[in-house]
Amino acid sequence: MTQLTTPTELRLARRMARLGPETAFEVLAKARAMEAQGKDIIHLEIGEPDFDTPANIVEAGIQAIRDGWTHYGPSAGLPVMREAIAEEVSRTRNVKCKPEEVVVVPGGKPTIFYAMMAFVEEGDEVIYPNPGFPAYESLTNFLGATPVPIHLREEKDFRFDPNEFADLITHRTKLVVLNSPHNPTGGVLSQQDLLDIAAAIGDRDIIVLSDEIYSQLIFEGEHHSIMSLDGWKDRTIMLDGFSKSYAMTGWRLGYGVMRADLAQHFSRLMTNSNSCSASFTQIAGVEGLRGDQSSVRKMCAEFHRRRDFFIAGLNKIKGFSCRLPHGAFYAFPNIEKTGWTSQKLADALLDQTGVACLSGTAFGEFGEGYLRFSIANSIENLEKALDRIEEWATKNI
Image (cartoon, rainbow, N blue to C red; front, side, top):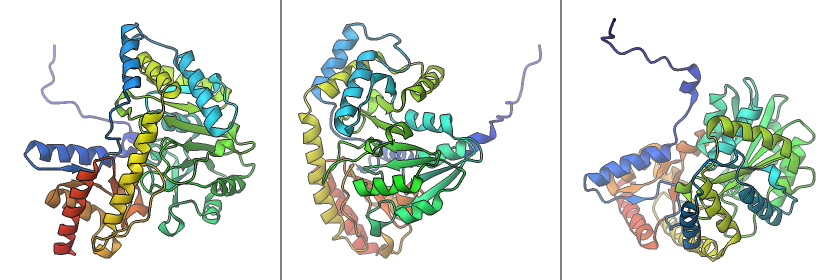
């Protein structure tokens, strides 16, 4: 029998070269390696609430394990979970949502992936916000389609310019991605913004993927969804979940809401990729939706307090200016007056001050000139980070 003496060549499919990274996890790994070497790091890089999962949800999850919810469930989700989500969506989006229009998935990203897998083919175009969540552009490229960024501009409070958006729509546009509240800018789409977006799309055969994962983390006003507009429920795939609002990132629990015939196809994608979402996390999720909501309100209020504190501090630092984000838990300061590029400044802050943040370019080409800080940390640590950044800026700008 012949034995191989050299490793075989790794011949990946060409599409693997089109799949981009998510910089937040790369920076987190570097920061943790620095911590292991004794460096004091303030983590403002990862988009994860620093709160524990609410106790009532934890207890429901533990009890679910004891009760035997540790086996396979239906690919689209447990009936009780789909019912609870349908109730929540009907109440919060002011539309009639049925359980058969819900597909439960492990986190937020599967809904993005399945939407693109279901609708986007080579040669199609996907319009998405830039700067924006990296998966939108990465998955579009992965599928051989053309990513078409719409520039979210600071002077527009990082909202869509309806005229610019209308000019980007072509006969090849297959999918439009919305994200409100928005990562990384904290921008929030108004009802009028959504009406303008809907008018620009008109009666074209275009599906909207509405990423609303931060829907409960709004500081001013209220959340609006395009699926709430007349005639748009059946043209929208709405994404939401438990990671951000309920501090359940590690539980991996999210959902998509869409017309019932499309939900059947999403369920097949679940069957062929994940089989199903974990049963005990779904039982915990039911408690999250139907149980006491005071923890969500307290967390949002604390993020609001941190936002006000951190943005005020950033605006006192030489070369930094930051608009007030209206939702999520991020600060996205303009750093053009520092004279530094985004990536070099982010690297310098981590290496020289121990403050971990992300370059704006981690969220696309239009993120140049910005940094993203997650304010999911204590006031004490945010104050310490501001002091370090200010001291560094005084010496280097």
